[in-house]
Image (cartoon, rainbow, N blue to C red; front, side, top):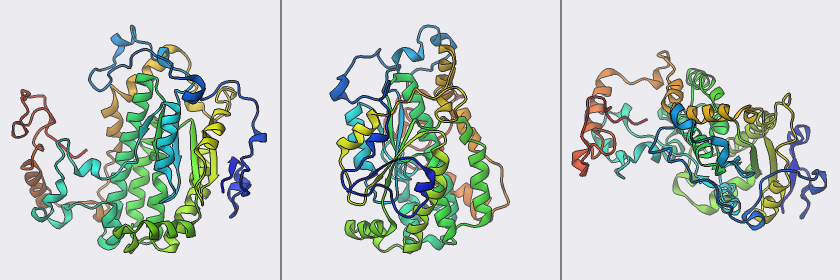
Length: 399
């Protein structure tokens, strides 16, 4: 059973999902599309100019004179986010859509991105050598030991990861012209923060630091063109968690019925209401999953070009000249570290987020002794690297 809602906030906030009968996709509500995303079955794989190697070369003002960003764009140069609660089926749908539209798939951010270094070494192995305040803490730990007062730190770390991941998604889109499909994004991250806060595992101080960091950084990004929300009631989520039988979920002290219901409520009452003002939004009843082909058809019907300059929807992508597009591309590639610096909010009034000097020094020593952790990748002799370390090369950090 699957239903599509072309967003009406008043209906969205009701407890029932509209158009719940099988086969009802609400297609009659769509106008004839004049310009939109096309699947490879419709347009085929059209060649575009070779992608700019943005990971190896810096896109600067000089290169911009010879490499115009918009020359690589086509109707599929869009950023799509697939969203939904735990166990909704986001990953499977996002991967299939990426294949259908020949887009770059970005998996959901997770703490492995911090704890497993570029050489494949898992830093969590070092926990026995570290002070308790410096040991690893990921989503599995949050589920099993939410009372350790590390929940706020974890949520802040997840925001860091999702923020960096979103910058890279924008950099990829603008450097290659290839569309991007993401499994969740930085914009929905607060949903889980708020749900954990309601359970009492994050303090008001931790909450305020998170929102200080968010307000200092989120405005530099461009919201997605399209958000696809898979609506699965909390009761169905609980049943799916039970069926997939992951030990850290079924034995969780966090994932009670209220927690799952809070996630559903915050998604619908806050996130979807906010994002729908700026992006196209498709909502599906995914209680019994659904047909990818129908989602593909619905996406192809969306006209992304019918908004005028005064409309807030898709305003983030209303960029004027070709040179303005080049400058946007520089921001998300060349100036990436400057954007990440916006995450550094100097707050020292929340004890649960602080590590004392002695523990911090011990952590630094232990991490520096781990394989591939003394310098950036390519400069660690213990890993067989042959790069020459210069005075300007920075020491390795977790972020």
